[in-house]
Amino acid sequence: MFAAALIAMARPALAQQYVPKDVLVSDFQRQKVILMRYIDIMPDDRLSFAPTPGVRTFAGQIAHIAQMTGGMLARIARHGTQPHGDSGVYLRNKSALKDYVARNYDFAIAGVQSLRPVQMVTISDLYDLKWPNFKWVLAVQEHAAWILGATALYLRLNGQQAPEYLPF
Image 1 (cartoon, rainbow, N blue to C red):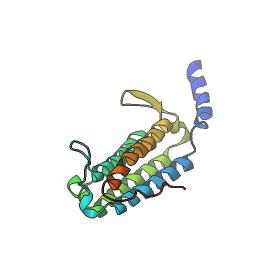
Image 2: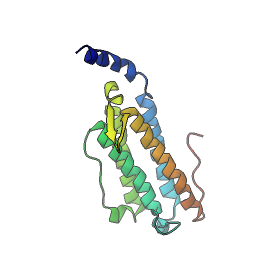
Image 3: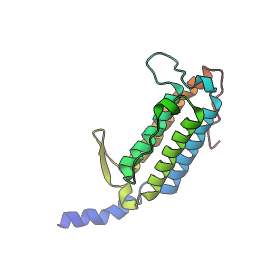
Image 4: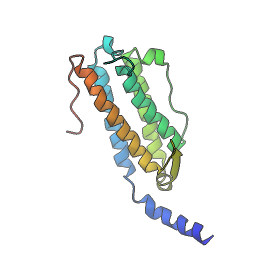
């Protein structure tokens, strides 16, 4: 009983040690803008471009980022069902892809905003890893940056310049 009381008292202190929600939200908003710019830059007829056999297409890379972002926040924040779409449509149509990205990012942003401080430090066991939720949010953002960096090459291989990195 005493140990449980100590843990409960320690949680508010731990909750003050994560990246503030407004910073996480602004990072997701910035990523959403960058993804939209990538989609806008790629020619319509190149959404299905893949640099080598066996890798995701350009649209597949973008959709993967959105799916992972929305999906992870659904698991962490538990604030509803992740937005879905028809991959037969959004992988071949720019406006449908932009809609899919926007809905998943808006869902993720709402998920971060819904997390109370104690939830930010709650441990979630995902993919055989036990991390506090704030670390999962950071990992989702890192994953998006990793995939987006690889996707810049898809643009270049199609004669397009990747958009400037925000916020610079």
